[in-house]
Image 1 (cartoon, one colour):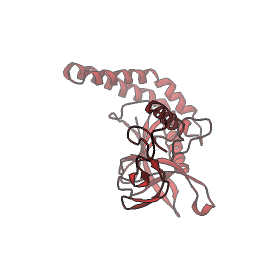
Image 2: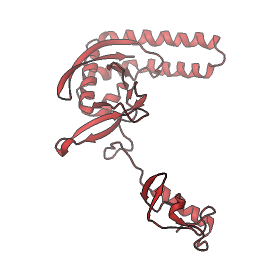
Image 3: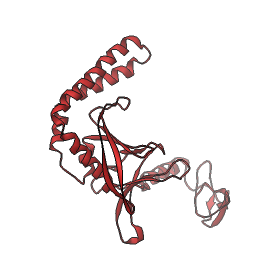
Image 4: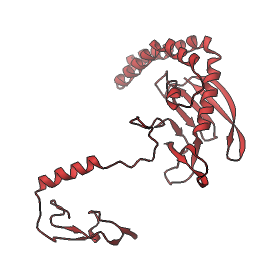
Length: 257
């Protein structure tokens, strides 16, 4: 039974109803077709009812379509792989085709719930591992490349600050982010050198901030040292052969600072 100013003394039947052309069996209070109005006098006060409703909302288990590892409060794949074509981040599921296999997968649809873009976690790890290994081969030159790029953009921020009065707050924020990145260059390069092939997404996220699946499709890998998505320096391009579906396919990728 339901009671507040909107539903005082109403009772939900919990029977099959038709709402918006759909057959529904529910006791949800928002369906007037499923209620007897003014069935009885209010049982509790509005204040008591609202407190009880808030408690129920707090205790209600949230539906989640993402995998949350034991002991973690958030999905480690959250907003990590982005489909440029669908303009959405891929979410994590464990697919079980025919109930025989377990395939951790990232996927998304477009706004019309069509055009499925997917990438298995296994292939994601293969791409990232290959990219970081290729990057580490040039680790002796990374410091000068990173420093020059970041210093140039810090100087650009100073110039923009003097000439763009409307966006000074954003410019200062960008400058602060770049200055912080500059201080982290040595530790970041050391992390690349020490990296070993892993099956832990958190290890990859220490080096990579975002993976973008382009329309072609090929992949852009954005490093986490530079936090500004508007600034990109191409560090390397390469390709890798992956098992996709029933065959092998060559996929190109770029690593961006």
